[in-house]
Length: 423
Ligand code: UD1
Image (tube, rainbow, N blue to C red; front, side, top):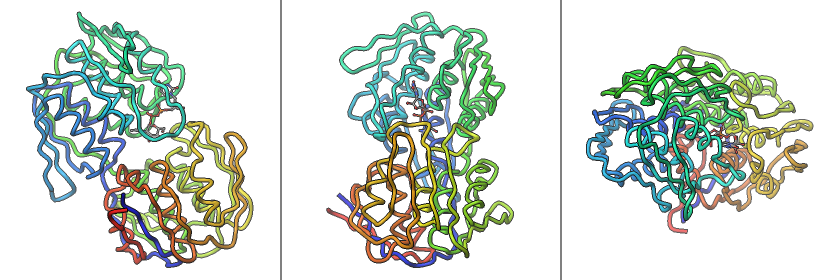
């Protein structure tokens, strides 16, 4: 298994090109299953999660072509010859987003089976909202031998669905399913994450009729079929935020080209309160820090609140603040696995239920640490960039799931970081 070695203490300085969004690409690729016409998706990031979903589609019978374009990868998908509509455990266990194939396959074929999902171990992460919502659209659902079996012999039927909790995945799954349902579907209490709007825009370019994107009430008028499209994925807001913290934690200056500024208000607001400077420059931002890191209390919330996907990274930053901060994790109950690892590096952090108390220390020290989930892993890289000495991060396959060219991008900014293969 590969490792990443970081020798910290260098102020990063340079330009980073932000990649296409992982969390937008995954549902968009899955939504291609809703049509038998050709789908082209541009600026798809080259990530393990994307490869996993493509492997799953290939298993179903999709023809996939992934080539290098001027601006990231270009993906061409042809779903004319889908013969299988059962997603097996070996593929689904690697990635939780696979559960989204349920809505798309069910809508198009009236039948689908998906193994109960895996993915990051950040809590129990049930899929009850997905399943209850599909039932409201007329599907019958059964659980058997670790598989969810869904069937709608006469097709799905539009309905009014009140989501009991704000869920990104459930909103996406139901939105996809409803595009081919008979009649009108109204989803209440939807998640408002930008990736949902991206998916909706993509579906609308295929001929879907979705209104209310970006609000908590999404209306979908079912259509008989969806057609061809050519769509470019937006850039990754979490990657933007992560590299902004790389600049902040090292006291450097990084220009982030293609930053998703309009999707990062809460993150930039909090970063500026911690003493980080963010200056817009066309479609780029320049992030820097000169003074102390100022402590600040943060609570994760659904969009437009502070994202849970940035919680581990900001904790690494606040571990070096000149005072105490409190972070409350409201979305996932077990998303603090980076705490013991940051503590190994000299951070002073204690956990009390959903709350972490971070007492800022003057410096972090390099140590061998273990990546536990995607965002936790990158928080260790960030801590390693600021720490004295060498940090060796194991189990970095988590990082490969979500950060395209991480080592190269940081090296370009002067970081002393290597990937060591074969451990
Ligand atoms: C997506 C993102 C992930 C991000 C998360 C929250 C992708 C591929 N993943 O994950 O990066 O961290 O949104 O912004 O886009 N819940 C239920 N029942 C359900 C579904 C969810 O109880 O049926 C709960 C979850 O356990 C969690 C909360 O709802 O506590 C939010 O989860 P959700 O928004 O669904 O996250 P994901 O879509 O899995």
